[in-house]
Amino acid sequence: MTQETRVVAQLSELELLTLMINMNRLSGVVGHLQGVLGDLQAAQTQEYGCRQIVEELVSLEVVATQVGERALDAEFGDLSLSRVDAEMEDFGDNVNQEGSA
Image (cartoon, rainbow, N blue to C red):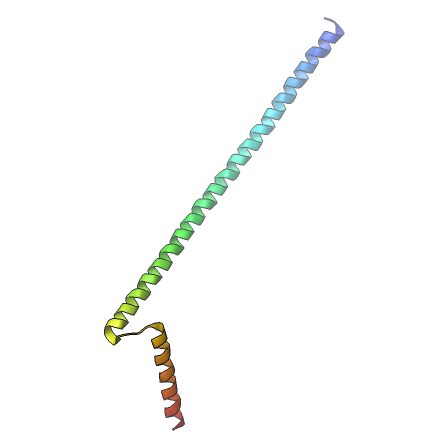
């Protein structure tokens, strides 16, 4: 075996070793990226759950408000927000007049 043949054989072993090292590094990076993707999926699932809860709470608030408005309408007639505001102002005026009298 000549010296050139040994150099070529050594270079091939060195290239193979370098390839194996790079493959191990790439495997590590891919494993890390899989972990990051898992974390992102977990955060996405958690955010989706939180948004669902908020939407349900808003829906419940809207329904409760509507039920309350209908109950008041049934009991007292028209109690739109503007009417309630007007009634509150009238009540305040009446209280102020009674207090000053």
